[in-house]
Image 1: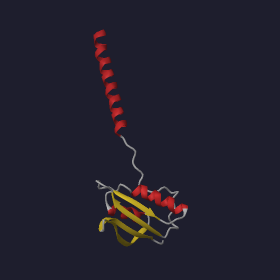
Image 2: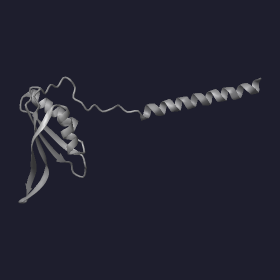
Image 3: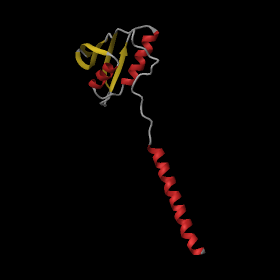
Image 4: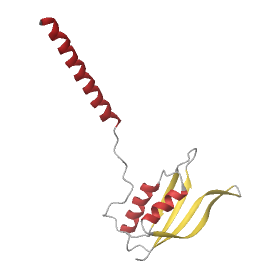
Length: 134
């Protein structure tokens, strides 16, 4: 009887080790999903227009996005929240789609250029968006 219990114990230990390693690997590879929608604490119903500046980052495909709703404290905070969510997107369409999901429509697009040594350099795009009335 003693020789038959050792393989059973060994099999139980192997099963426990396998289960432990599987559980550990699942936990180490699981990631928290990034929240892409605004929290309900930011209300944009009273903001009529948004001014969105989109610039490319150096040596990257990611975009640097700045959203401007106005100059009150509430508008500045909402603009920073939108900017943080939209920065690092890799597509202009993704920025527009996000704003459309939040009830904004495109009014006008402007070319954003810098002048350096007398030469104009394209550095981004400006979207002027209007809040869609319900």
